[in-house]
Amino acid sequence: MRSEALLALAALCLTPAARAEDPPVAAARASLPLEEVLRLVRENERAREPRPAAAPVGAAVSRLLLAGRLLEDAVDLSAHVELAVLAEEAWTRVPLLRLSPQLHLSALPTVEGGELLVDRGELVFLTRTPGRYAFDLGLLLLARVEGDARVAELGVAGAALARLDLAWDEGLFRLLGDGARRGSEGAALFPSGDRLRVRWAARAPRALSRAAAEPAERPPVESVITAAHASSVTTLEGRRLTRIQYQLRFEGRKPLSFRLPPGATVEKVYLNGASVPFALADGTLALEVAPPRVGDQSGRLELVLSDQPGAFHLSGRLALGLPAASWQLDELEVSLHLPPVFDYAWAGGSLALDEGQDAAEVAWDHSLPTPGKVLRFRQSLVSSAPDVAVRYTVALEGQYYRGGPAPAAHW
Image (cartoon, rainbow, N blue to C red):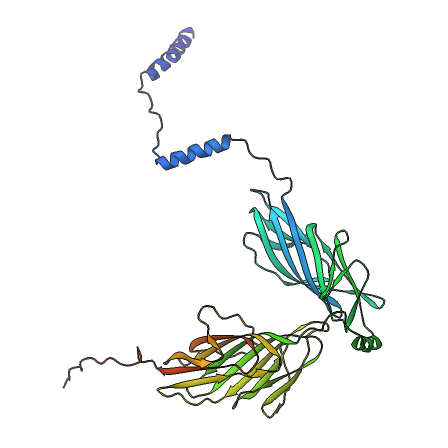
């Protein structure tokens, strides 16, 4: 038994000596480009540097500027938001508005680097990218009834500057309560605590007549067409369909008329997206327009016209005349959709060729395919009937057969 123990001890003593005779293991090595080595050195140096102190706040809303208009039972709002995110390498939640059953979002933008979402009863901006952000929102704030008055309240988050610029039709409504700074175009309201409160009442019929007789607190809104877009499609057979959409700014119910170009007939009339009846008298279309909601100052009118300019020849001249409106027209954009078998060049008219800009996106009430070549034109401050003329000639390039040798005959 003792001899077995001595043999085991001798074996343990001999084992390290046998391993010491093995060749040494080579150290691990790796080859890196010099640029990578320098990058790793810089990262190591930065890791050793003391980290700057974190920002005292993760984010802050600097501006919340609202523009609103009184309606019969609501306030139509647009909000411009400016905020700064200071936190780095962390998700930051920025509260903007407190939501309620009376508040509806009508327009929500896409913000690069962040997301707008609803969280815990608030509209918040969420991001993990520091920087400054600015975007616009569309809101509709419903009112509750308090006696003869309407009251609308909006919960706002803390902002360095928060203000509501409010406008209304003096003939329809009167603003109630104190704290509003009145001006020629309406009033400016500021939040009390974390809430904006608007209180107004409709004028009684007797008060309406008295308001019409007395001088208004501000000048009336001028009736004007702020922008118009026309899209005209002409076929090879000589039939032409033209849609014209007018963006209107006015108050109350107003007359608006159009003098049609010779040979044109009216196919459809749409007011604020709905088809309305119409009548022509001596080439004049007379309408009465109204905003889609009581107290609003905007509207949309779309006309669909047709005429027969005649069939195309190998070359010639094609003219387009548009209606003359009784209101001032600030800006007009026209797109001509013409048969692709011709080449075209501007030949005259009050509309000038517009080559530098893409056509504006228009939500037409009357759907219509727009095939062919497109020419775009523009005119500003239109006070008469706009028109344009183009010369055309057949486009031979690529439109004819290039003959080759006749195939051999086989009998």
